[in-house]
Length: 203
Image (tube, rainbow, N blue to C red; front, side):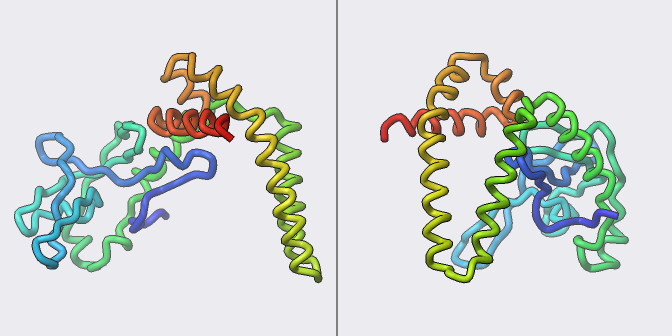
């Protein structure tokens, strides 16, 4: 069972597709973030955490929850919120949000299917590099091992600086939606990634 987490849901390799519990009001609309008074000189904080939509302090009252993703995806299934249960437990983290989470997981599976996969041999090589770098921590001569790690990082950065900008330039000329889908990212994250690699040409 997945309980109501205090932070968003993430999957390795798809960090820009952060998931969370979304809520709906009685009229079927999605409420705006609520303003929270932090009690420090009129300072307010915005939050979309589902447990704040409980109707207290003139906040909207949510009647149901659903899966939600940073990319704009919203789950089609909705789940009634039992506020009596939430208040009884006095801990939103103890409330069952398994339904929204599983729907978001299915959404991420769909995103992953449309994402360009690394060639199997390349994925294997990268895994071996990461494993070998991790094993350097076990060396008795820690200073020498760390120096070797940094040299390895330098080699990787040199490869990235050579390959990344060219690949980014090719993708920049393509349609935005297709690029973000191929990278398994939101459009905003994909644009930022392309700009990052184009920036490497300056060095």
